[in-house]
Image 1 (tube, rainbow, N blue to C red):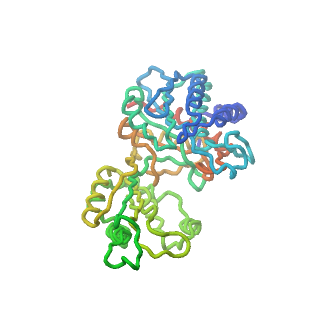
Image 2 (image 1 turned 45 degrees about the horizontal axis):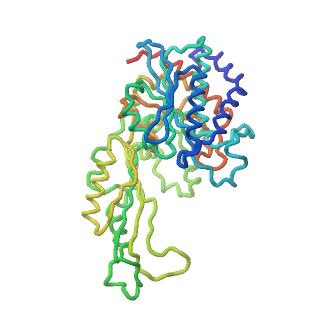
Image 3 (image 1 turned 180 degrees about the vertical axis):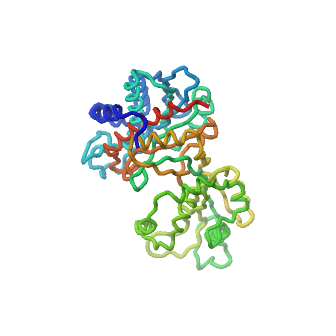
Length: 458
């Protein structure tokens, strides 16, 4: 299965585990909590120094939010492709602290896993990328056969509010042929994945208002309107019994999946019965296996996240609430635009509701790279070579990442290859990455760069 001639590189990587762990532990020991602004400056400087030690020309670039760290190794050969590696150096808060088995900022290896905040998301995978570059450079006598750029942000865990503006402002600096990212876990089967896109997101809050204060339901019930019922009636106009969204024009711009994408949906491993059991659902509540991933990746959704208003405490309280609200998210697919969908939602509310406020909370565009990209097979070949396993092809994640900044603002294909184990516990206590996954990630990074170096730049 191996065809890249990198056996010596893989052996070298296996033999350098202690060196890799020492460097990774230094990064994991440095807090960098974006939502709290803790340790961000120190982490960005540490990352810059790490890039320079490998051989990158590196700099910290300030932004309206947390700084970006940029690095480049350029060959000067325009016939060789340029790969832009993206990652993030910020992490989630650690609470609840008492649920951790060890200090989240004192990395510890237990039973073959590295435990620390950021071990899987995303410092462990980011560092694996860099060590892959380092290992390949050593194999190539201190040079690379293609151009490599890196851009690492410090606000991904805070929604990447400045990434789009930064990419737009620095398009010349970030000019590349392909964006390569490692974030998230492997497929639940343990097989590696190639991810070619993500769904977008529109998050809103709807609030129905009645009287100026809560009222006694006996003294006022009947003649006075109840905003909770106004909200429920409105929600009932938004979807039919089969789950189809009834907002006018909602599906107007939905891009139909290609034949290759439909074939990929069918090939993704799925144990429908096991999934249903793990969720506590009757299997009949889930779509057939051949439709499961098509619905998850190629169809938009309208979801109720939570409804609140009135009395929800223990016991009873007879009252008419002054207001009621619902938080909703819509996962969008190419070529839907969040602003366009928001306008259509507002029009629907005006038509079917009364005294209801619609507030946009956040939005992100969907993104998709074609499975026929000239970089798809070279990356798949590299992953097969490094892992010995055929990767699962994911046309899209059901979730949302800021991938559109690369495919739509920078205008280049983007492919994501996760390295972390499925039970990495990212965003949770006892976050971890298996040592074998970390090493495999380093091998993947080296193999991907070697494979892409053999592709002629467009």
